[in-house]
Length: 387
Ligand code: EMZ
Image 1 (cartoon, helix red, strand yellow):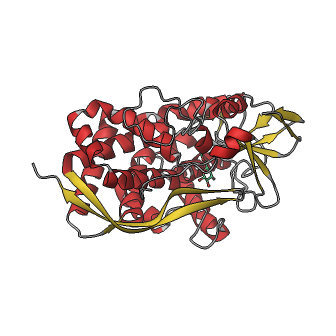
Image 2: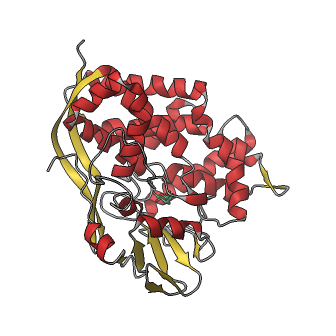
Image 3: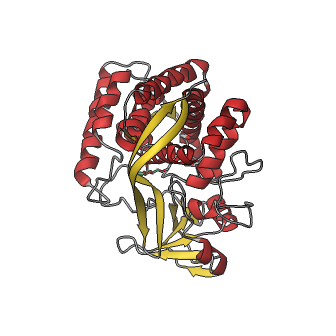
């Protein structure tokens, strides 16, 4: 097996039963594993709700570490749509030329710094820095702010020793509260100020609602982007020919990004709370319990994808659900896609090969399944492309 491979732990269960089971903090989850069931369930927000107790649709559940409802993520239609419409244009800014130009400059500088050193630890010294700096563009605040975020580490709610870390969550909340107060006193062009000036149905957003959007912006795209970046680098270390193809056929880069998101599935699953007794995939599900939409499994479903366990770098038809599906599809997807495109094209332009020295895999424990999502550390070296 190649080191960059992410095996599919769900294959057998997906084929035989279509569901998996997981006991998360005594709030069990029935995991839906098939592409068809995942999509159908994602559509049905009446029976499978997101607007449950804040934190409950996240797996592992965050009900014990936060009270703030993340917006629009933990709302259901029709309210969901009002907030989504409000924030959507802001989260599409990554398509603007100026934004892309700044992102290219950031990633260029980071790759250049990395080319100068003998060993780089990809998680801490590359992916975390890249994600944090890029996030200053999404917030539209000064670049220097990324230093604080880098010091928080790779996950805002999890630490090395504990899946859920309340102290860590409090650092984030206190920081956000302070930033909201600052923006009230001194409004600017940033995300906080935009939200504070916004209205839904004629009413200004409350501080708590502003916080809900901001927490999502910090938490949702943190470890996910870091895993996508790190997995892409591990893959390219074993597939120099893909770097070569990006140089010759830059038009496949967007396809390559979609394929990587499918294959890596940086977010394994997302939960829903069931509002009435029902059936999914011929399994009875009780009201008030949880199901999950297992994106990582759906993305390897052989009923949909040919050679699902391979990265087909220019895959033509790719209805992956790596950014979720239906009205809750990832709000940060435009930003994430832009990061990945710029990363791949910058690496192709400057890097001839990548060496990996040592690494430790990051394995998610899902009871019945164990899933590799990325790495705890990955020591590597970028070799400059010589023409
Ligand atoms: C939540 C979630 C959003 C959650 C789309 O995913 O990402 C997780 O990493 C966070 O812990 O709070 O934001």
